[in-house]
Structure formats: C-alpha cells, structure tokens
Length: 269
Length: 117
Image (cartoon, rainbow over all chains, first blue to last red; front, side, top):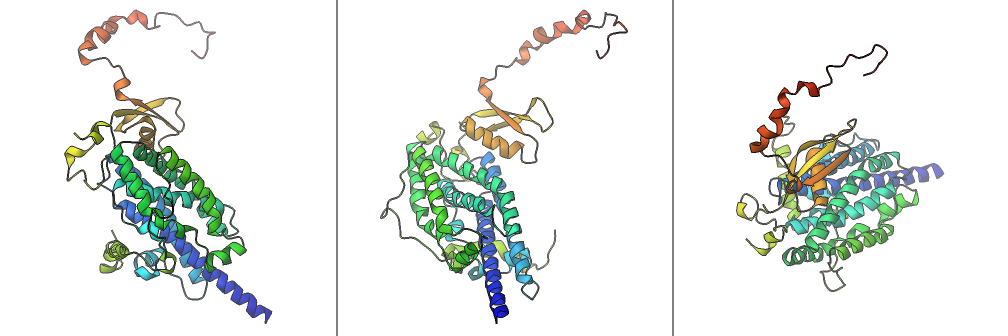
C-alpha cells in the first residue's frame, strides 16, 4: 500500500510540475506576443528594437518552459505535446498565464506599467528558482535571470522618465499604474500547485515574493513622483488566469497568434 | 508643437508614427555610439541614435548595436558636444602634411642590435 501512496504522491507532484511549467511558459509566451504587437509602432525606432529584443528573450524562455512541460507530460505515459502543440493548438481556456500579461498594450505608459509590474515579479521568481531542486527549472532560471534583470531596468527607467517627465506623461503613467494595479495580486496567489511544489523545494510559495516586489515598485514609483495606489483608488483585484479564465481580449490575441498555424498545419518557411 | 514635445517627453502610443509622423519626438537629441569589442582595446564609433537622455541612450545603444554580442562596453556622446573639422577646413588642415616626408622616421639607420622596433 505504501508503494501505491508513493506513486500517487509522485503523480500529483508531476501534475503540479506540468501545470507550473505551463504557467511560467504561458506568462512569458503571451507577454512576448503582446510586446511583438508594438513592432513598427513604438514611440521611436530604438524603442521598437528594445521591445522586440525583450519579446524575443521572453519567447526563448517560453520555448524552454513549454518544451519542459511537454516532456513532463510525456513521461507520464502517452507522448507529450511539443512546444508548438502547446503554443498553437491549445484553446484559450487551456492557457494558464496570469491576467496581467494578456492585458492589451494600451498606450506606451500602460505597456511600461505592465512591464514594470510583471518583470519585477518575474525577476524575484527566477532568482528564487536558481536554487530549485528541479535542475531544469534552475537551469532555465539561470539563463533567464540576466535577461529579466535588464527587462526590469528598462521598465524602471522608463517609468521614472514618464512619471517625472511632463505633466502629460505623468498623468498617463499614473493612470496606467492605477489601471493595471488590480492584476498584481494574482501574481502572488498560493494554490495547490504552488504549495505542492514549494513543499519539496521546487519553487517558493508566491506570497513570499510580494515583499521584494513591493520594495522595488515603491522605490521606482517614488523616484517617478507617482503615487502608489491606495485601497479604493483602483478596481477590485482580478483573478482567473491560473485556472484558464481569461479577459475578453484574450480570445482575440489567441486567434491572431494561432491562426496561421491552424490554417496551414505543418507549414514551413 | 505641443508642450510635451518641447520638453522631450514621449507621446502617447495611440498616435503611431505612420498615422502622425509630425508628432514623432524629433527633438530627442542625437547620440554618437562607441563600442569596445570583446577583444578590442579601443571604443570604436559604430553609429548614432536618438534618445531623450544619456541613460536611455546607453540602453538604446545596447539594444541596437550590441544585440549580437558586438561589445562589452559602450560610450555614448551627445553629437552636439562633438567639435569636428568642417569640410571647408580640409585643405588647410590636412594637405600641408602631404609633402613632409621628413616627418616620418624613415631616414634613420637602425642599429642591428636594436630589436623589436
């Protein structure tokens, strides 16, 4: 009987690891797609290149993480899905990214606020994953952590320049902070998946990432002369991405992202 | 021009470059970019770009000029801070050196004992 118990514990651990890799991979993948939407319409040519570089960094992370999720699926019995299957053949309800990364680009300030909030979280998370007992996740984090450190720097310097810029840019940046604030809490939610993995040292439970996040965000917003939203300044927290419940705009994103692959299966160029 | 552009701020992205070319912040100054390669000793001029200030110029230079591992160190210099010779000055500046062969150390006999010259 103990053998059966051990096996079921192993199975639930593997299921948690698959879900967790999909979450991280989908976060990177969907944000990568949003940033790619900026190409050729950023405020400056140089910013086109900067956002495209960040987008490609995220795409690289997504490939590693989705590929790993597919491998884990495979070792459970049937052959797992490839990274392309996971990226292009899942329906919207099967994506496990947080709501923050799928939010529409809005104006440049909204994109920068989204970048600031997400990359600050992602950097803290990858730093924690460096010591994961899961060697693959630790290796992926080691590759990504330098990239994300730059992404956070990029978002931080822009937040300061827009916030502490002109009256107009400040009002747009402040509005963006208020608009995206409701999507922050979801990043730090704990559930069965994160608790299962935290217990064995694969990751740390997300709530413990909140303090470093708050510290950096408060520093940047203070330097940018922006106000940290108080309770009541913003809409209530939004959640659902981790269980596949997404915003309305997500359907359009998925349709645009997947339609070539679905219309021309197996197409190469 | 709006006050936003006067201050070198960033326009809202809702007006794209294509839709409103006149609202592009052309007042962002030009920066000259110098990159030192992995094995190089000198910073070499690689090009120029627009940026609102020095810190962002460095970041833009990183993204535009070192994304394929071209360098390990970047300098940016505001183009307007560079004092350059003008084409009109070219002849008086440089032509007189053309016939001064004696300025090259070619008239000395090098002693056999002196190596590594």
